[in-house]
Length: 220
Image 1 (tube, rainbow, N blue to C red):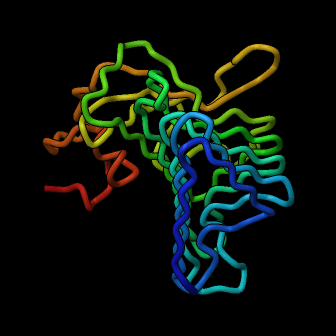
Image 2: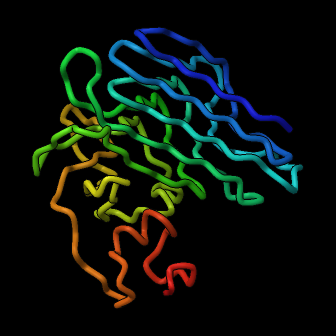
Image 3: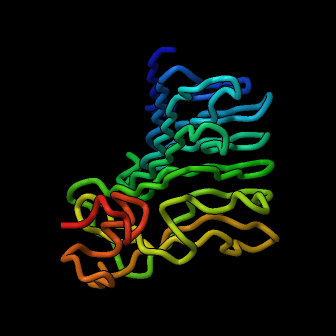
């Protein structure tokens, strides 16, 4: 068990060799990659976020934050979460000034397969950042998407995700970038006003907080 944090910034480069964030026994691992030119690279073995050990009754939690042009690259698979023992994996994409005048989130480039199992996606926008309806950002560029584990648990295909400061993004999992490249993308949309279950909470806010609009924790 244990807890650890790592930050890659100011154009820095860090290299990993097949790492798991949040392995077992209530452990917690968090990595932030932020700013233009900042890169975290994994060249040996799969990179796992909150994957958990198969022998652990108390698997840990892993959080990967990709912000303001920071890039995560993995030559092998990227595993977010895991089906055994419900370990938690979360990816957070933060939109802001990359230090060179461009307003962008961070990005993940996956050279092999993207596996999303019991995984959550969160979006954030820095205070004071202005976005235009229709702007599209690439979040995860991947070579392949797992046939069964291909969605974040809290975000169905085409769902709208709200940020804490009420900006909204529509998430798509197989946007064609051309030349055969596919990606998970976030497109800026108008904040939604739908409340399908009439509980005075926006559906998109319930999805962000609870993973579904019918979760009993959202009941007033």
